[in-house]
Image (cartoon, rainbow over all chains, first blue to last red; front, top):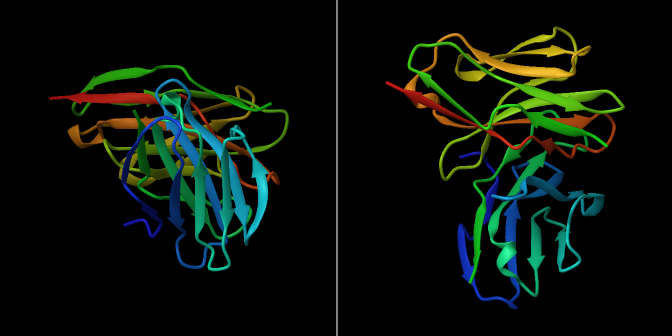
Length: 113
Length: 114
């Protein structure tokens, strides 16, 4: 157990729908990062939050949004889902803004049908 | 913009043989370097990292990597592999003072055969 908890582990939904993925960081970690892993794009950075504020944005679609709450858990919202959004979505956390090695969660596998 | 190239998408090797997984990166600034391993249906586990200091870095499970600044490489090595090392390996970089986002390579699938 890495200490980073992602729920749900699996999600199957239809095109056009909206889903929310949840991440609880390791105790004491202030930064949360979201990544998407797909067969064609590989592992891509989506967005980072630090202590409730957005710190960095990567290749995140406008249909996707995220937030970090006061208790430091984070949610990634994916809307108007398309078949191509099917992927593994990973959350990672770290102590602060700088890297000393992330801790990754086990991921949420999203299947859009 | 920074990028990471893993030169081999698949590496088959026999048990107890040595292995090298190659990684080259491109960046205009100083970087931190990482290798992660992903076992089937699992998340990413940190194998080792280079932040500063000695260019030879030792990690878990007997892996090591050498940072070569002039060749912008960070190749991963293990002198003797086990069946249990079969997994996907990812090289990643992060630009220093840029908040910590990782740029990953496309991955190398290591397949260890008996």
